[in-house]
Image 1: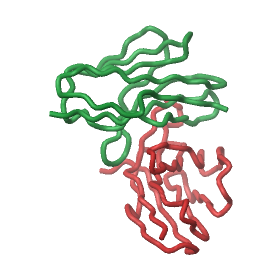
Image 2: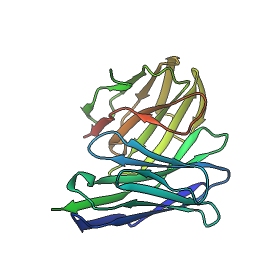
Image 3: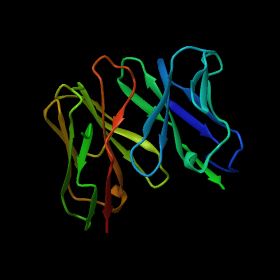
Length: 111
Length: 113
């Protein structure tokens, strides 16, 4: 069965800290890995990764994929209270046209 | 303009009732989904339709029946509601070229009493 596991499940840090969120996966036929941010309502797209070792960056957020070790990390530097959210990792399974989600990491940034 | 819209946003009902949630997307995407998010925030796929045709049914009880009248709409009907059906139900769509990115609606919070 296709599986995506995120760690930690919950993380509380102070504003200005740097955080690293982890995502490991076991799927039958990997196509891509995606990161989403969920605040109060719908998840919103952050990154899609398909190739190993190529960092994707957007402002203070960055992510990288390791297809050999089957994991990805999401880094957030100089965290702000607005970064508080649930971060979801998902893997797209080739041919199945679906995303399999991890259980999410709840990130809380305290002022 | 809202890309993926769901109604109602909140639904409170008694056990045993039947309810429907509607979803519409104006993105021109071929594929639409229903996902269920439980109280632990775990998002699990329920159904997927591609151009009105059912392509994924993830062992969901047959009390749940999706209907896609056209490729822009995917509705979810639930019969004989149970307490365990309480969750947030998200509709989503994906382009036909299968970029992998899902576009989510804002969710419909269902509470069964």
